[in-house]
Image 1 (spheres, helix red, strand yellow):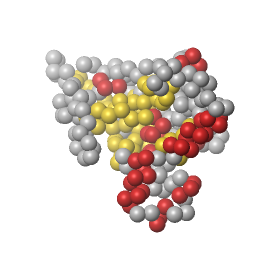
Image 2 (cartoon, one colour):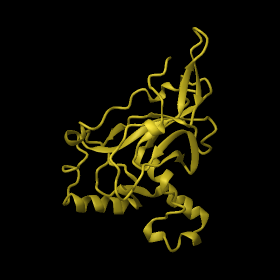
Image 3 (cartoon, helix red, strand yellow):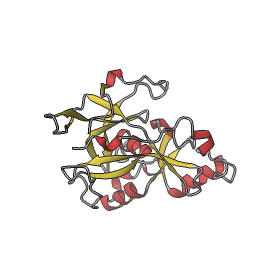
Image 4 (cartoon, rainbow, N blue to C red):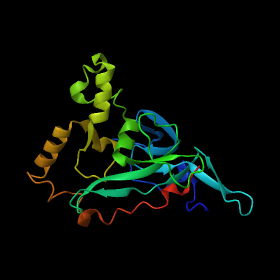
Length: 225
């Protein structure tokens, strides 16, 4: 299958409005479960890109897939709705990983991958904060003074259970400075306080308000290795 996207250098990516606090857009290879994955990159402004490229082989032989870290293909986020079907919960991406990337769980192998690569859905806000603001070097404020003394088993529990709060309560605003780690209780209480006691009916992520800027993810898995 021919590649759908045109890959371009990062310097030629569409420009975005820079935040005066965050400064320049910085791109890094994504971090998932504490491990760097070189097939994709994410910026501190919440944009996600693929480094997976395709070039045609001999006639009738399809395409060869390879990684070019200097070329970027911007990926469209896929909207994940809450159980009511009206309010947006988050933006997510279905990404490819090498078959040996995960050791604690057997994720599904993509049927079109000739190398047995697996797929996993990853939330966009998790990609941003885990890549650009590691919990080990930037622990939550309540744990800042004791993080170094916490046993490793407890740290791992915290890594796996901490949730991410959108400070402005907008689930599609995944710029780094809009994200913070907290407990599930703190996350719910912040939402209730912001929405005056009923955040479901007043959610900023409602279908009506968020329909225009969101596009369904398309073609992300065409670049298979």
